[in-house]
Amino acid sequence: MKIRKLLSWFSLFLVSLVIAVSCTTSQTPTASTSSSSPTSTTPASSETSVSLGYSAWPGWFPWKVAQEQKIFNTNKINVDLKWFDNYTDSINGLTASKLNANSQTLNDTLSPVASGADEVIVLVNDNSTGNDQIIARPGINTVADLKGKKVAAEEGTVDHFLLLLGLKKADLTQADIQFQPLETGAAAAAFAAGRVDAVGVFAPFTTKALSLPGSKALFTSKDFPGAIPDHLVVSRKMIEERPQDVQAMVDAWFATLDYIQKNPGKADEIMAKRAGVSVADYKQYNAGTKIFTLKENLEAFSPGKDMTHLNYAAEQISQFLLQTKLIKKTPDMNKLFDDRFVKAYAAKIKKA
Image 1 (cartoon, helix red, strand yellow):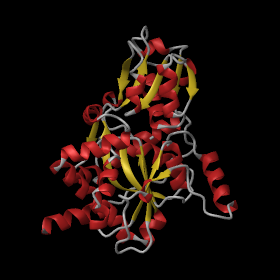
Image 2 (cartoon, one colour; image 1 turned 120 degrees about the horizontal axis):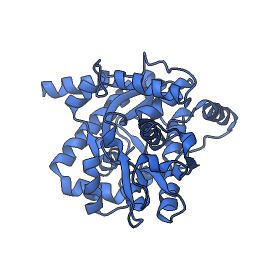
Image 3 (cartoon, one colour; image 1 turned 135 degrees about the horizontal axis):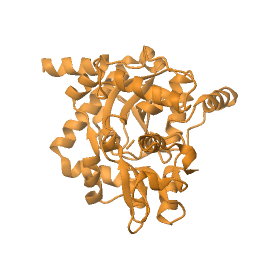
């Protein structure tokens, strides 16, 4: 909910490389490191912690449950869970090797990979099924009504992508609107204050945007099934040097889903607090996010000819990104997906 990154990453990638080389000391990305709290993960079997980034999206809040309920510890992994107020910063953090792993969309992984980043998708967290929305003020009733209007979204994020999908379906392009590039939180605030005519945001920022009286969603990710899958993405180096820790993260994820199923009240409380919303509001987000089961993960990683299969979805999204000039070349998808960790968890469960 959430990726959140579609803009051409070439310049951003070069900048991140320059920063990585020129810095004399290791700098932490703009984030609040929640693992420093009393509920943080303490060292287990791994002496070196795994830095895992996540941000404001319902499909990623279970990581906070894993931390608070010490599910990482149970799975013998020391996770330094890093919260990012700005989702784009988390993507840049992984690209610049400031993170070992990050929670991000397929779109936001294809873009840096197309520019040379070596990142791997090892787990499907969820699909957005309505929590990404293009919201308009009163008087704008169709996508065609957006022509000439001010529309805000975080440039390059998945909601920018959703906006382009909706415009294309209505035979419009970004040139037909007055696009206003704003960080997601700022975009929602600007819309609620009446400074822009429409906005592309994801939950929980949708709540802020919809606080404008009479506002409504013109279209959502539900209208484009499979277009916005969310993932656990790790660096190639992480897989090559510490595959046991990648496996432990995947195992911890499924263990967390089990905990949530058995303890929905406590889990909702933890996730709502991290989201900064009431439990009642948080529950409304559930309908717009489809958390993937183990079976659905296995199916998603298998080859197929529709958007429920990652290989097909990646091909379709890559074509769209090329056509809209958001990337300059097709990313190498030969090593983009690695299902061995999901399969290993499935095998372990079968034996149990």
